Length: 65
Image 1 (cartoon, rainbow, N blue to C red):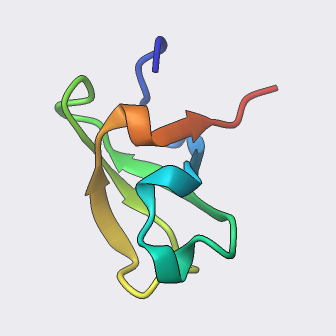
Image 2: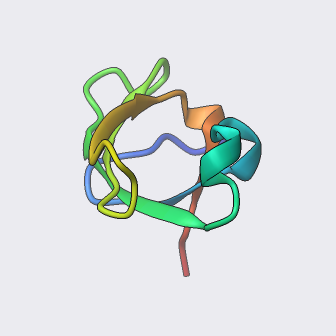
Image 3: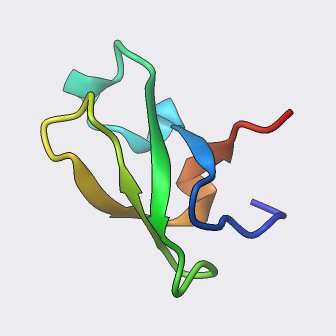
């Protein structure tokens, strides 16, 4: 990801980064902790079994206008 993610960004979790049983749906979330945003960000994603988790920025696609 070229742009740094920051708190409040809406993101799509790339399907290739998801476990096989989660790939059938698109999972979006909101960045809630960007303290170390070059290495990982914490994302709140209510549609997944674990609602908060850490993701490498390359696993996410920012949804921006």
